[in-house]
Amino acid sequence: MIELICGGRPVAQYVTRPYLAATLSPRPYLHPVRTLGGTEVTELKPTDHQHHLGACVAIPDVGGLNFWGGRTYVRDQGPTWLPNHGIQRHLSWSRRGMDCFAEALSWEGPDGGAVLREHREVSASRAGDHWALDFAFTLYNVTRAPLRIGSPATNGRPGAGYGGFFWRAPASSSQVRAFTRDGSGEDAVHGRRADWLALTGTAPDGREWSLVFTGEDPWFVRVAEYPGVGSALAWDRPVTIEPGEALSRRVVTVVADGLLTAADIEGLVGAAC
Image (cartoon, rainbow, N blue to C red; front, side, top):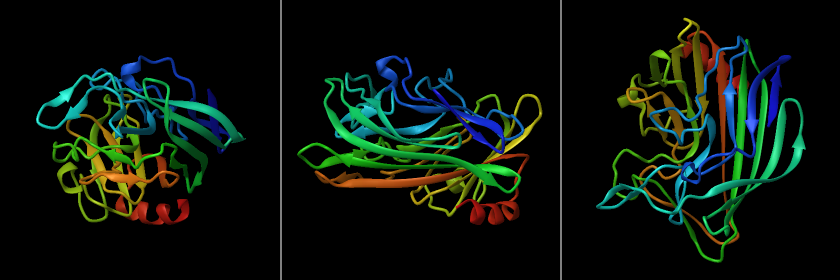
C-alpha cells in the first residue's frame, strides 16, 4: 500500500496487492480517497455490490474473462456465476513519489495466462482550493488474437455499458446528485458523453462533497441504486484491441469539499486538465 499526498495532506491510499476472493476479480484500487478537508468519498466492498472497490479500473468482459467481479451477464440468460474471474497483478513500479506513481500490471485469467499488460500512471495535484486525481492507463493486448472488450450492454442488457475507470462513492451519502453542463439527474446524464460530469452528496456528519470527472467515453452513472460513476469503454458496442496494439484512457477527477455549481466547475476543469 502507498499513500498519495497533496497540499501536505494524505488524500488517498493505493492498495496494490489486495487479499480478495477470486469472485471479486482482485485488482489494485484507491481507497480511502478523501477531500482536503478529510471527507471520505470512496467505498470498499459495500453490501450492495461487494466487488465495488473504491476507485479502480474494472472491465466485465475481456475476451470472455470477468475483470469486474460478481456475476457475468450472459445473453438470453442474464447474470450468471461463471468460473471466469480474472486478476490484475501488480508487477513493478517505474515511478513512485509522494504525489504520483507509475506501474506495470498483468491482467490474467483463472489459469494464470496474461491477456493484457497495463501501464498505469496516477498523480495528485492541487486544483484551486481542492485537489485532482489524474488517472491514466494503457492496455496492451499480449495475446495472438484480437481481444474483444465488452460489457453487459454489448451482451444484451441495455443501459449497462459499464467497464473502464470506475468510482464507487459511499452509500451512506445523502442528497446525491449527478449533473453535467447540459443535464441534471441520473436519467439525463447516464450513457451520455460530456466534457465533465459531477457527482455531489452529503456525508452522514453533514459535510458536503463534490466529485467532477472528465473523460472521453460515455458516462455510466448510478444515483438511485447506489452512488457511482464510470467511464464506459464499451457502452453500446464492443471495442477490439488487435494483437500488439493498445487502448489508452485518461480520467481526471476533481475531489472537492462543499457542493460545487456548474459555474464553479467550468473554471476548475480547465485548471485541472
